[in-house]
Length: 508
Ligand code: PNW
Image (cartoon, rainbow, N blue to C red; front, side, top):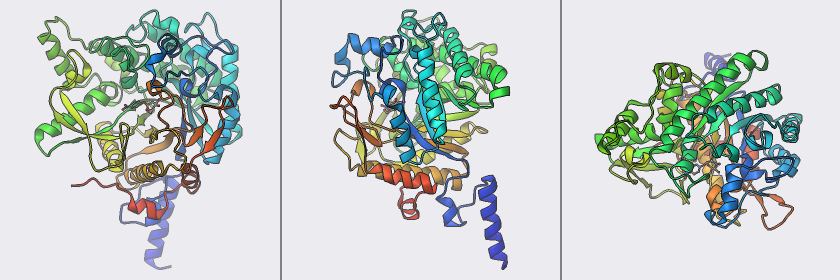
């Protein structure tokens, strides 16, 4: 064997056996391939797909309550009472995942399906049975379950106590998590405590954005931040101490993080970009994933300064005591990311006073010249920049892309824009892993099937599979993106031509 051949073989063995990233100059075959053991699948959330809102002993959630009381909050007056009927059709859903060659399915547990009052006075066995059936069906088909404990459907009984801004809710969340670990942890090895706290905090800063519609901007959302971080940390530590020794799974949290590109090359805009990332991501990530813990300095300073200006004697952002900082710091085995889009950012003033938006002191705008749908721009290099920024800011943590996807208006089965989006973003993900050395362990596309897109009702479609919402049977149909994704998942690679054509390098 010539020396070159030996080197190539050794490099291939290294990359295959230990997932050692090859440098960009190496074999082009490797660069478009996912590492061994990489998870590839799709995601959903309970309220968006399950339906069965009052079946099998399920209690009322804040979403049931809010959309029943105010049906006009959704774009089409619809709600999740039936949704995609996954409560009855979960076996079919598992076959949709099989059709994608997925090896992981991210779904969420409905807290009030398991604990109808949110508390342990009533542990609903029918709810536990439902999730056991789903988990067993997944495993029988070779698909790992990845479970989100909280994807926004708080038991309404706990909203009567004020919901997440009330720190006492953490006590209930820990009990709920314990019941989930006890019942499912023998088979579930990937756990997420929360989905997108930054996004669901809007349910407490706006009357109309999300349930429960408690309108306390700049106050409730920061109180919620402390309560959620403490709840997350306590659940992580519970798992670590009581369940990890026997169950050997991993616990993380998922944050929504877009990329914010400075509008100009000025130092001011670079600062605005960092500030926006700190207010959207750092508020949650810094306490958990940074070496020093606590809220980011820039967030603490700006909220304190605005609070003083408003005549308050205390900051609207609660403080974390040294003991709380220690409790929260380091409480994750991996870092979940929901990434959809990139925007431009400059410093300036937006949002009402007080509000988190106002505190951040930035103005964002959408890029021009990229494919756009609703609030999403198709900018693959934004994901690559974000992953590099995250890896630099929070070294030592593996990342998992828990959501990424494209939305269409209703009726698009030949979803060429979604295909373009996924080819680009999966290529950017591969560049981040193989060229940049960012440790990413998995990817779940949003979403497996068309579902209730919160206040947009059924008017915005994220599914790889479409669902006919006019038919009581809720039949599923594969969109054109399904065979494309199924091939990528099967080959565990983006086809070379698509990979090389993808827009993965930021314009200079
Ligand atoms: C996420 N935005 O929410 C949620 O985790 C999903 O439940 C949801 O269906 C999905 O993304 C698609 O929207 C977001 O306006 C909602 O920037 C809105 C935004 C981002 C994420």
